[in-house]
Length: 368
View 1 (cartoon, helix red, strand yellow):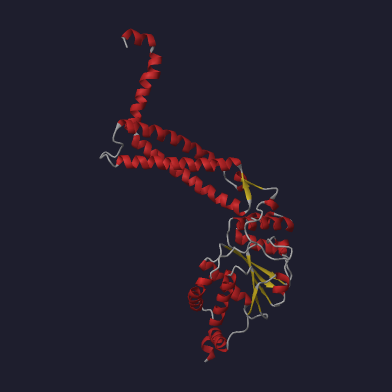
View 2 (cartoon, rainbow, N blue to C red; view 1 turned 90 degrees about the horizontal axis):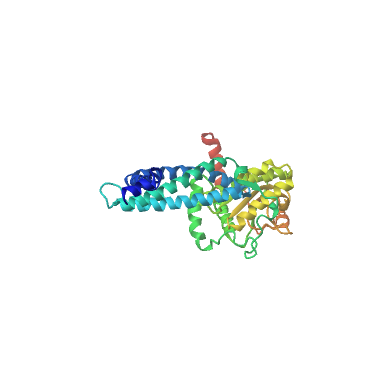
C-alpha cells in the first residue's frame, strides 16, 4: 500500500480497522495468564451463586413447587457456562505445562485462548449478576394449581411393592451387627431381637404396613424410638417421618409433624386440612415416582386413622401405597382390621433378668 493510499483511507478508518485490532491482538497474546485468572475468579463467583440457589431449589422440590421458566433457563445456562469454562481452563493448564514460563507456548494459542476466555468471562459475569433476582421461593418457583395431579402413579410399578428392596439374603449378617449395636447402646437383648424382626419385616417387599401392639406402659414408644434410630443409622430408608397419633386424632397436627420431617415447610401456611392433605399427598407421590424409600411412623393409635384425610397415598380400603408404615397400638385389632397391617408383633414385658438389670440401673447402689 502506497503512502497516498494510506492518506486516502483516512486516519480514523486506519485506526479502527488496522491499528486497534493489532493492539488488541497483541494484548490478548501477552495477557493469557491474566485472562485465565479472571476466568477462575468468575467461575468461583458463579459456583457460589449456584450453591446458594440450590438451597432454594431443594426447598421448592420439598414443597412440590413448579420452577419458573426464567430460573430453569438460568440454571441450564449456568451449568453450560461452567462446563465450557472448565474445559477451557483444562486446555490452558495442559498447554502451559509444556512451557517453562507458565503461559501458552505460542502467540497464536495465547490469542485464541484469551479471546475465548474473554467471551466466557462476560457470559459468566452476566449469569452471576442475573442470579441476584433469585432470593426467595417465589422468585424461582410457584405452587401448581393442579397439585392433586402433580405426580400420578407410574402404572409400570406395582402399588408400593418395590419401595424397599428385599434384604432376605443379608438378613442373618445384619442381624448380628444390629443386635450388637443395640446391646452396646443399652438396649436389652429381647428388645434388640424385636427391633431386628421389625426391620426384617419392613425390608420384605410383601409387607407395606408393620405394627407393634402391647399394653400401656410396656415400652412401645421407646422400642419405636430405638428402631427409628437404627433405621436412620443404617439408611434403610431415604426418608423417615414420625407422628404421634394419640387418642384424640388431630389430623392437622399429624400432617404437620410428618411434613416437618419431610422438609415440607409450606404445609403450615395452609389453613385447611384438605389443602394440607393435597400438598402432603403430592410430595409423597413425587418421592414414589423417583423411587425414594419412605417410612412413616405412626405411634399410639387408639383407633383406625383415615390415611387419605392425612394425605398418605392409599387405596379405597385404606391400604397404603408408595411408602411403608410402622404403627403402634394398644389394641391388636386396630392394626389388621383398620390399618391393613401385613405383619404385627406383640411386645410383652421384659424378661426377669432384664427387669432386674433395669431396676438396678434405675436405683443404682440403693438396690444392694
